[in-house]
Image (cartoon, rainbow, N blue to C red; front, side, top):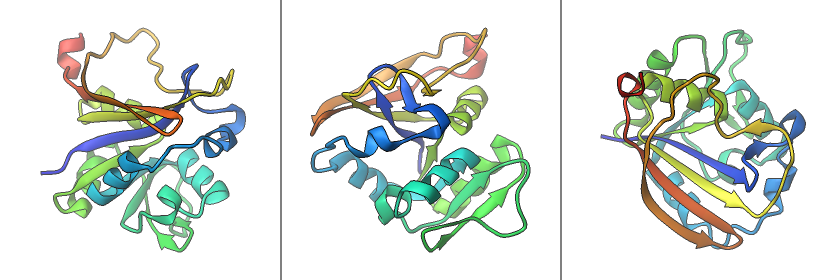
Amino acid sequence: MGKVLWHTMLSLDGFIAGPDDDMGWAFGVDGGPGQTADEVVRSTGALLVGRRTQDVEDRLQPGFYGGAFRGPFFVLRHDPPAQPPVVKGVTGQFLDMGIEQAVTLAKKAADGANVVILGANVARQCLAAGLLNEIIVHIAPVLVGEGVRLFESAGGAPIKLEAVSSHAEGETTVLRYAVRQTPEERR
């Protein structure tokens, strides 16, 4: 059975996007041979992303993972347009539902492979619901200064993680953590 993974790039000062969802800083970072991203793409059966992530991908990239991911993707948003989302030739599906239903649908589409979460808001919802198994972060040697934080939970209890691996890829440091605490344990 596949896992639910959050895969992201992070600036050294804790941002996954700059002001106005700017990702230009991330595209100039040498990620080396990209072994982790290649492994994530190979093991992924479906993506679950937020509206802002889909907008960024549509605007800046030749598709998810540089066009390497061609499978099903779902965009979680509460005001979906009539037309389905299209990211560089791949048609996805808008979902207007709770996070539990969205993850269940993505897992079904993944057919036993992993579901990858892209975007801070969707990842936060997955963490709060106890649906996230692992977090994979590529730390870039960049200070962004402001923007979208990796994680924010005002008044929330800390979430305990267990280190799985840490290694260098190009200019980045790749950290992988297992989420080991349920929402009930955080209360």
